[in-house]
Length: 426
Image 1 (cartoon, one colour):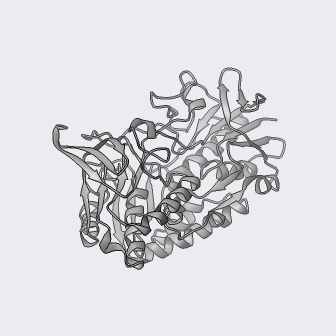
Image 2 (cartoon, one colour):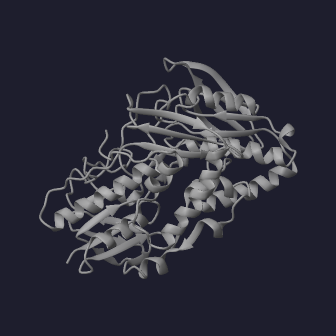
């Protein structure tokens, strides 16, 4: 009998637990360890931040849903991973032994890299439900005395979609409240151009997103290196294509939401030989650690090189569909290892995304994620907005009911009119 421990219970960890339980016999024990006792559907946080969703709609208690599938749950933070001894040390000092470890922790949010930024500083965040609720509280105060708004992504950021989403959702909410005329908006991003998204652009994303920003009176600064934030002021160095200083900006704001760069969480980053210098897990093509053969990883916490070198550092995003295929690969490869066979299943580094824009939306497909691509597709329309609302309900239902089917593949491909994808298409 093997004990498989999954570290992290997000959009990678929960499906991993359900897939493993279905794939493996009941002789094998599965335990999920998470610092929090609830699941949160992070893609809905931009809606929470403007009051369009409440916590109860996008969170649920983890334990009862796992336990009814015969999966153990530990609601504690892991303080240390003993990769040589195959055990975890928990916050209360107890230890948990494993035969296989799956790391799906998500990232550490590196607000400290830009002085004055983040929830403890002067900018807001939508990276967690707690942050989104704090942003909503701050936004309500802002509505009493509207002023300039700055939205965007910090140097080193890799997740740009939610920043675009929030800018357009905020724009839409202000229009509905008849407050938009009081609010100058600026989108500040480390991307070399609008629509880059850490992917080198997808289809006509540059011109389409620039057009949307212009049509909604949102100015932008690209190649933007935010150096520090003070109360009501953001200091931004704009670089040219050669990486030289083009202009220094001092942007006033009454409200700001800026996505941070990511790192690996402390307990994972501290394991010798497991991670790259930023704490992301180094994996082979089978989602397995390059040093520790019984450790696997999926999601935002894995190391993926940037698509290209940019004047201001940008990372490559890990989208939901990609994470889903990583998880499935891990499950199949652990099952193979238990039966004495070699790992043979690979995740698909393809990007499929639905991005809400308030009352419309944008969808993109990049196959593979890193160019040149076999499919390079970007479209917008109200149908994307409606599809994302439906997907939220669909995903939450599946996670509560312990479904092991590929949620992103089944729903998103159907929404985009795609029959199927070759998961091994690289």
